[in-house]
Length: 247
Length: 305
Image 1 (cartoon, helix red, strand yellow):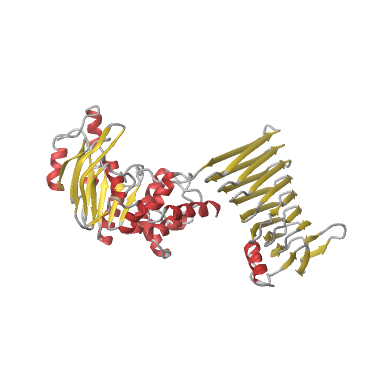
Image 2 (image 1 turned 90 degrees about the vertical axis):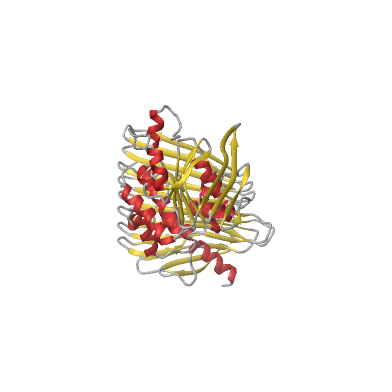
């Protein structure tokens, strides 16, 4: 479905991604993990077209999309949930869900995607997506938009950030439901062990390269095997004062 | 009525057929249609151009439409409309002016609307301004709204300049008595070399009176807008003024807010934000499949909704 070939990206004389090669197969749930600053979010933005690689190719469904714009990639079937969702003065939750779905959505469908992320449609559909919404509410709306978009490939950039009050079980069940309903691939950038636990495959990015990529059963023990005191990779980083998570 | 006239009425007053209830339609400086009801009377002024709209106390669930349309260039239409709203009435008033100018002469309408709301009266006032026409003549609209709110009276004012107005000076003055409340929502769009100036001057004289002014505007191309507000809290009261503007291309917006607390129990807030469309907003909508232009339109339409 998606193939990254020799992707390089540098900024301010710093190599952020170095010859990244990665294949994401159809209908896979893939979690990309790694230390902060390892290049995970940059990689996600490159797939969506928000950042342009210095070199390398991106193939999606057999088509070279390296030169395609964000809009064209969205139309090809790529979706992207921002780590920090954007606020819009004037646009309502309903507006954004309709734009995501690409048409005028039936009310019951809009209600369903909001209910899946734990929001009451009656209360939220006509609310503006502005600063009156909390970070957690915005994050859930962002996820609901991607559920409505039904992309062949959906990328979530740290979906767990900012939803502390919402149980992880719900978040995980949203991903599983999306995976079942849409039959597309889901790529999640996450540090959370519980999200890593639902992956078909795990990709470990360290220092701008793919350190590990394989089935969860294979990669997960290698990541956590040597990090006994900490549940999260982020904690491991703190333990090591910013060290990498090389196994 | 021809299609141009029909379209103007649709734009400014959402009228496609004869409106329900009381109405007065003014075209090119003359009244062309009028209807009154048992509770709402409309009387032509004798001393100057304009009408008095008299609404009886306790009138509920009725509406008044008083749109003005100009379809000729070289016309300067000045009109004084006075609204007398009786005690505890609760009505909707739809005004607005549309200009179609296909000439090279200026077409101008200056509507001076004065509201007198008696004790406990409540109105929703909707005012839309719109200009069109292939002529090079200017389309000028200078509305003036003077609001006198009696004890516990309340008014909700929705003021919208849709598009096509070459220049406008929009003045609103309000005097508020005990327990009265005023909510103003303004939306303005300017393009080309258009100019728009808005002035709000509110006197919160009555105890527990409150005002909320929310202005949203978009200045595109080389257009210039100016927002001036002065809210005076002269007693225990609450005032909130919010001015948000999006600027595009060479558009300019000047915001000049003033809040004046003349009493220790006056609580006044002013917020103003001017800026271009945030890049991340465009990117977000593009990731949903919109082109940059479509994303821009969505953001502007939502902002001015």
